[in-house]
Image 1 (cartoon, rainbow, N blue to C red):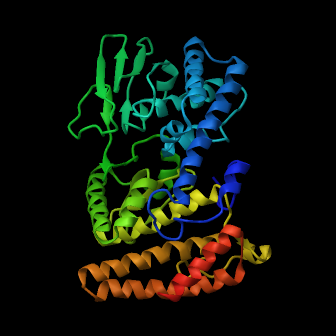
Image 2: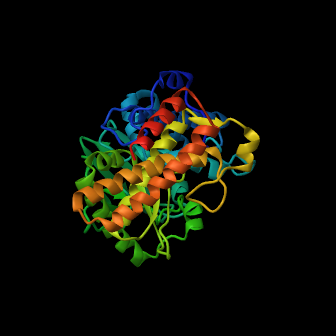
Image 3: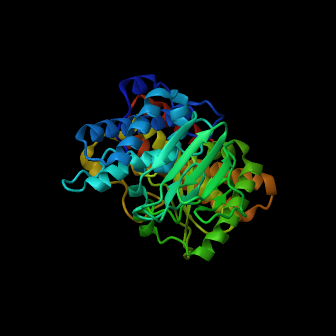
Length: 413
């Protein structure tokens, strides 16, 4: 996904008539939630198109072709609300990305990339009864990550066949060498003490998966210096504490975050806090291990970016009035380098939310000085950046609604 790009079907863009749930967190059912569902359906449709193309090319072996046809049948026949649930994870964006490598002679990796779509159909209670036989090619690169279980599935021996059976509210893994495993499929997580030689549970933070170990995440995550294993455990504890704090002081923000953020990655601690929400991994937040109040700040900041990224699937929000000025970029109070107009939009949006967080923190704990100091600094930054944004941004119809909201909110800081 590219910032400022308008994608989605013409119908979905036409139905976008407001930006409800974008400026600040909102209750379920707002426009941001509807767009989140549409983006998941778009992934399912992309996977269907990729599979049809590969099946027509007849480049798969028998087991791969069998699985491809099974996935296609499910995509063709299950209800749209079910597909939206299945393809709501960050890995679904990677597995169905439109820029899949299609180099000549690289048929194995291309086939595997398409067939990885099966992992989004394993262990989700919305899926009808189904049986999948997983070909050895899915395991050539190591264990297979299953997003709805947040677990790594192994099948190290190519001669061993693995079937996954979804039936009557249960998920059953059956290996041809005699090993099997049955799990209740009711949407619950694997327990912390879960042990199995071929299925390993990964950590959660407040019920949200932590994806530091996932190979598909590594190319994006490595540039941010991910945390070491012992630091991940500390990070999980602090994120959970920050989520509890957010639930206490701003329940609406906590519940919106729980719907929109799909995964965390823990970054190594430095002398300054760091966070990032990569658009290519929708719903994923990278954040460093900080004190609980600072982590609450980062969560509000990045969940704002996640909401903005959801809208940018369908609407660019703003463009610069003067493209040459945008190319040269503008002064940002939060950065030492100049930023394009989209960067200022993100800054005003995120720090409006951060300001509200600190006001609620101060109101709740009445501790005064520290939180008030941070609030005052960010209030001045938002006012400064919003003046530049309003002057140089040319909004879309939706963007005009949002910039008007910004103006009203900034006036009340």
